[in-house]
Picture 1: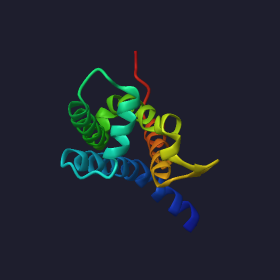
Picture 2: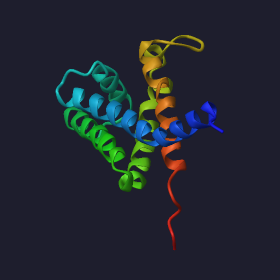
Picture 3: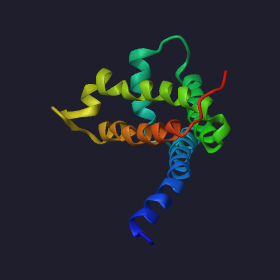
Picture 4: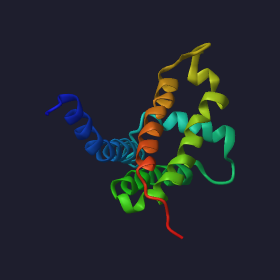
Length: 144
């Protein structure tokens, strides 16, 4: 017997992994490319966080590395065989991108639990984390 509910669930299960990969690719590649092109609206946020945390290299070099790092993460997620490499890089990126919530509270929060636009930009990373968890949950264990 045909069940619309069952068919819908099967269809969504089939497309969940590719759509999660595409979403992560789109965000990381696009936002990284905007940084490479020098037109990212996040550049001042990155510069301000850099000024509070990293002092061992020039900002321009760090910014280009960060931009290409984002692009690489996006590209890696497109290829299922590279997922185990992409996941730890995404984790590193997520740790660095959450830092403004703590190091730059005046930029991230209007008041208690009311984020600024920049804060919302950072908090939306929870959706990316959920996509990455979805992708990771479908990996097959490494055989010894």
